[in-house]
Length: 340
Ligand SMILES: Cc1cc2nc3c(=O)[nH]c(=O)nc-3n(C[C@H](O)[C@H](O)[C@H](O)COP(=O)(O)O)c2cc1C
Image (cartoon, rainbow, N blue to C red; front, side, top):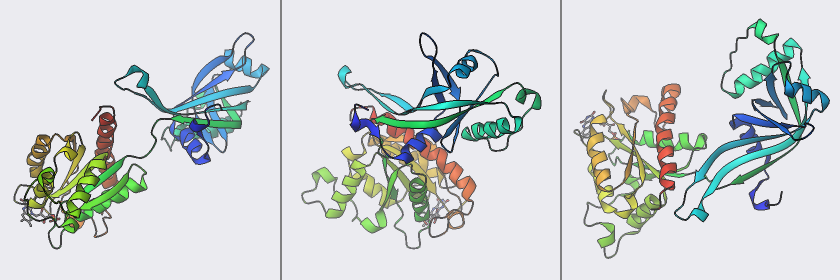
């Protein structure tokens, strides 16, 4: 590969591309020019699997020469800039060589189809025997493979603001949950900004107008500024969000501008703190933050999560969290395209 700086050298990333992409293109030799065919595929143990009708141009060509070149691309995006010369692509792709065997045995076809179906998320599969008898499985044994990437593939940085400073607080459990969730799923580099630890005094003035701001204020401002996105976990107190959070929002100015912010509301009642949404969103809108149109209300906080942030109902909580975080990640990506 000529551009060594773009080469993917670790096998794990190559496996991630193979596991996370949807289409594989195969170039088959023909007399005058290569013949390229896109396939849905499955991958297991250094082999790619495809299904095909038993007759046709690709099968005829493969019977003459089964050596192929293949290409798979993962998450391609155009990165727009003000100057046309600055436009670029963010992509990851692999190219490889191998040989294709045409498999006609019904049992092996079924096994291959299971691999393909599982690649697209289906684990329990039912097949119609009549259709199976009208197809072949193509098994591509990979001889060599190389990966290439361009663009920023670093994980986004998400700051989780834990707003409650109350003795015996419960909403902090939700902040702990999000930190773990983001880390475990490798969605972001996450850290908690705990307003109880910062222990800011009651508001005196905004940071840019303070003569000698404290270390704590500078630290908080720096972390909000450098975060790609923010999750605010807030309790509901008397229908509003707590003074500690208003205090921290008002301290900063520019740091909030165009910052994607997702809000999780928490209460020990049945409404999950949802009454704070409008007032908190409005304050953030005034600060020119980009609030994300997603909710993560937590009802009965003291029962829904334990003190370590482990949810009582792991499956449904993680399912909700995935949708909520996805909206934030979308906004992070969108704001990345806008000069700040
Ligand atoms: C001052 C105060 C006011 C509260 N007001 C409400 C309320 O209006 N609605 C509600 O559902 N829960 C209310 N609660 C209960 C909180 O939602 C509950 O304590 C929750 O766990 C708050 O998060 P925290 O434990 O982290 O402070 C209130 C609690 C306090 C301390």
